Image 1 (cartoon, helix red, strand yellow):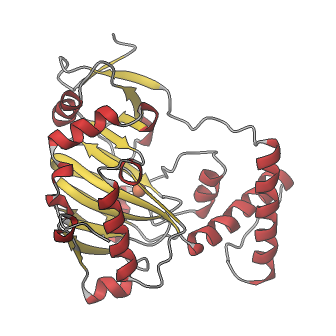
Image 2 (tube, rainbow, N blue to C red):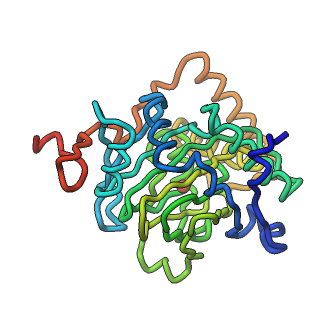
Length: 317
Ligand SMILES: [Fe+2]
């Protein structure tokens, strides 16, 4: 039940959006961006109370194919407003992970958005949904990647160019998703600028939201203003099933030297892979998987308002 203030916020889905949700790229309209929670002052207060271990601060290079330029940093003794100022003048990307689903101020907005998605498609049955808040610089970019969950990106402030590519070769090799599920690599995938001709492209303005098919590769180039958006990552029976098959394929490949060819979620092979996936996860639960740290987690810069780019490299300091 929405309280009276939340009553004024909603989203508007066209006939096409209802029909194509999660099957093809779609864009819908909403007015959640008018909520005061996305103002500088409210976000600054959130930054200051949000757990540091759930706050990612990153920067990146100019070249859309140079995914190795993505790196992490830290903000120490910096207020929330100062951090937003560094974002405004620098080339930064901040992810307040789980802010929407854990912070009491933001949770009602999260609940309303999730209810909108369920209402738009009664067959959409989220098993688990998490949402952070992204605050990024006017010129920041996010390199081409494939998320393991179903995703919907709700845009609040600034303008960002969003491109998504079909979840198939040459744009997506499911072996990359398999490697992400096995913690062998980050979600970034190889990208060729020639693919842009085949992309679904939209400039997201405040009050727009985009959704695209599971594992669909996508990338983002901010166009103007401090960008604020809310990415939902949603696990559904469909995403769990496909990821279980990919995970099992990865076990066959890594542990048994067998090169699986099928990613079908039907038939006896899929059933056996599902069983293998369950067994393997139980083994990991009992004995651990000797997990490697995710790449790029090392912090290489500090937020520094005196610097023109908003931060100072540790090596250069
Ligand atoms: Fe993504």
